[in-house]
Length: 116
Image 1 (cartoon, rainbow, N blue to C red):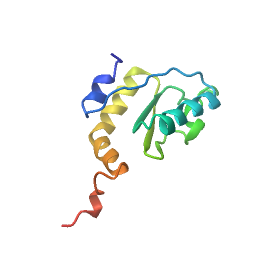
Image 2: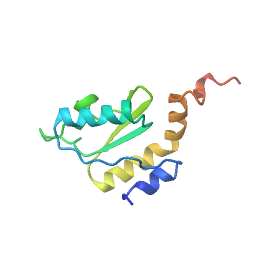
Image 3: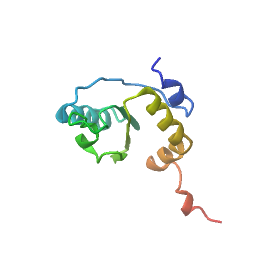
């Protein structure tokens, strides 16, 4: 089991694809597009490649640095490379992630649009 797979399972998710990709923009972009467009994955988490080194290009492959983004019906979130950083970031976003994905998929209304 991947170290943080239990956190993903805690919101009813499962890891269906795990790939290590070199720090090459074209290869990262190709894999992310495949996961979004061909596999139709709802949530894609990347780890690593988000630091300040010139080789850290994961966000720039499709997104701005330190941001999440949406491609079609896929939410892509870039996480740090360290296991501790991944865990801390996942723990921070998990409480809202399930509802956010429901909104993305049209399965729930946005909180602000609910009638009083």
